[in-house]
Image (cartoon, rainbow, N blue to C red; front, side, top):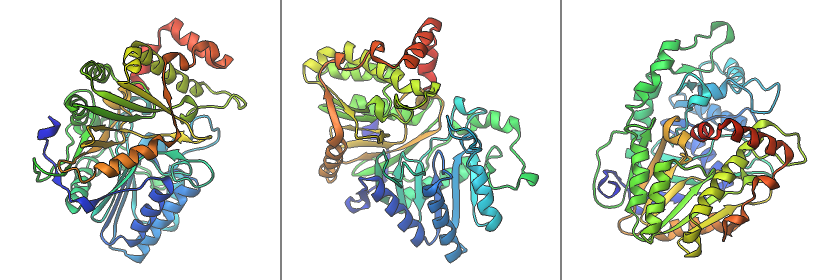
Length: 437
């Protein structure tokens, strides 16, 4: 499917790489400051911290300098209205949005998108920073750790695509399927005047989102980029493209995912390719590089068991495919760099077809969250060296797994983790958890 997929024609100079969080932040702020027509930002959240407020100030400054500038920020509705997991007394980012707009009434809209009625059932995981004719695409959200504000960072992928057709296509989809929907509301409303979306609109929003698509005048040959969007396990264009991309590989696959918990259909496709002799490199975060990892010296919270659940999923996969590891076909690389975290996603097939995405390639992304991605097809090979250099940069802080026994077992885990994991096994809750994690 992917080889015949229509896309937007892309010239060699229109695709650029931003390798580090600092590069991403600098580019984002520079583009905001120089914006002439429109700024659309879609991310899981815009945090009430130093980096988040810096981005907010940049948006306000750009709007003040150019009142005609069309500025819209979209974040997940539920995530914006709650505090951070494990942090007591934090009441949600929407309070910061309110305070800002009290001092700058009507400056621009910050919209909450309730993909599902409850956060655990699905969130806005749509990504893209669309500024005039450019798209900065990353799986990153906006806060201190994603933007490397202090001494700690969360590593992601960052690409700049300067293409007017792509930018217009992505803005149009947001306007048509998100901003125009009654389920989407402003998060900047004053408390005494706040009007929340009707429950029936939120409940039925999923049905309307499942029909979302990017519409553009496409080509089927040459170097091109195809924007993809998907929600739910049925008729999901992004999910179909992922499987087709994996199946299209003739020699090699390079896969990044922060949490190793792939859907069964993806596991089957990977195993089939291994048996076909395709070499597969998977770069996954070490459990200590997981967002939710809690160091042993700190107070434990139940959410801290997640990295260990993912690690056991990785161990199980590696054990079953040890034959491929021994044959040099399957190379699993664990990423770990000091106390930083890992958040990379994406797939490259034969270094000529590349999926840049915010999807975690797990059951939650596959069925619950609103996800998108950009499929880059490099038929002439103009970007082969650049993608290879990006992969080498990603691999700098990795260690290859030569045997599944290198992955810790339950016996090695801290006591609180053992208790939770044993309880999950007794209740047979791991099957359900794997579907929503």
